[in-house]
Image (cartoon, rainbow, N blue to C red):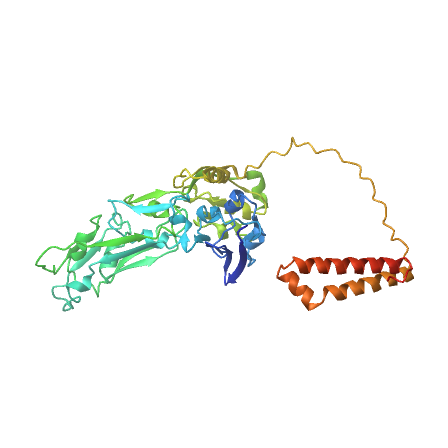
Length: 448
C-alpha cells in the first residue's frame, strides 16, 4: 500500500512555510524572503526544478516580493536549498531536527573565529554587516570607584593621546567614560568605524589606569595615579554567531592585529564588464548595493561602481540584480562539510558541483529516437438494434415474476445462510420453471 503524503503551504509575515506530512515524519521548509537576496544558488542546485527566480531586478530596486518561487508539488524536501544558502534564508527540519545539524547531510561553511591575538577591541563588532559579533569588556573604570573631583588649579594632571600611535581600537573608551570615540559610517575602502578619540578633560581624574590597557602605548598621563592593591587585567569576551556569519572577512580586514580566522563560503572572482558600465547608473539604481550581504560595493571618484573583492563572498546576487549585465561572478570552490557515504551522496555531490557550474546536470535526451506513429483504424460507430415494444413488455413481465421469487425473505435467508442442500434444489427447480414460463410467453404461448 502506497504511503500517503500531504503537502501544504502557510505564510507567516515574510516566512513562507512549506510542509510535507507522512505517516512517520513531518518536514518543514521555512523560507524567509526578506533575508533572501536572490543569488539563485538554490535554483541552480534544486534536483527537481522546484525553485525558480522571481523578478529579482525589480525586487533589488524596491519591489516587495519573494526573490525565489517554490513549486510545492515538485519539491521533494531534500533540504539542499537550506544547506547551501549563503544568507540563511532557508531552514529545513525533519521532525523538528535541523538538517544542518545532521552529519549525513552536508552544508555550507562560513565562519569567523577569534584567535589568540584577539585583545579584544571595539573595531570588529560595528563593521559586521550581519551583526554576528558581540564583544563584552570587563572590568570597567567604575569598579575602582567614581572619578575623583580635583580642586581647580591644584594638583590637576595631564593626559595626552598620541594620534600617530592610536589605531582607534576603542579599548580605553570601553573602559572609561572619560574617553569618547566619534563614530563614522564604515566604507568598503575604509572599514574603521570611528573618526577620532576624544578625552573629556573635566571628567578625567588622571588615575592612569588607561595607560596599561592601551596596546599601542599611545596614552600618557601625569597627575594623580590611582594606587591598587593588586594589578588588574582589562579583557573581554567576543562571541560570533556562526548562524549569522557569512564569512565576508570585514572583521579580519579592520582588525589591526589579524586576530580573526575567516572561512569563506565560496572562492572565486568578481568582474565588472567595462563595455556595459556606461549603462550603469549607480546613484539611481543601487541594485548591487541593496542585495550585497557583505556591503562591499561603493562608487569611485570616477562616478562608477566599484567592489572590494576581499570582502565579496561570491554569492552572485549582484550579477542577478544588475539590469545592464555589468557584473560577472564566477565561483571556483564551495566550502562545505564532508559528503558522507549515503545512498543519496551522488545527488549531493552533483548539487555542490552545480554551485560552481551554475547548471544542474540533466539526462542527455538528444539521442532519443521516437517510435513511429501507428495508423489508428477508426472504430465504427455502434448502432443500437431496433426494439420490439410488445416483445420487450413480455420479457419485462417474465422477469418481474422471477424477481418476485428471488425477493422472498425465505429464499434470501437460505442463500445468506449458505444452506444450499435440499432447499437450493427446490429453489432451482422453481427458477427453471419461471424461466421456461417467461420464454413461453415471449414466444407467444400461454406459458402453462
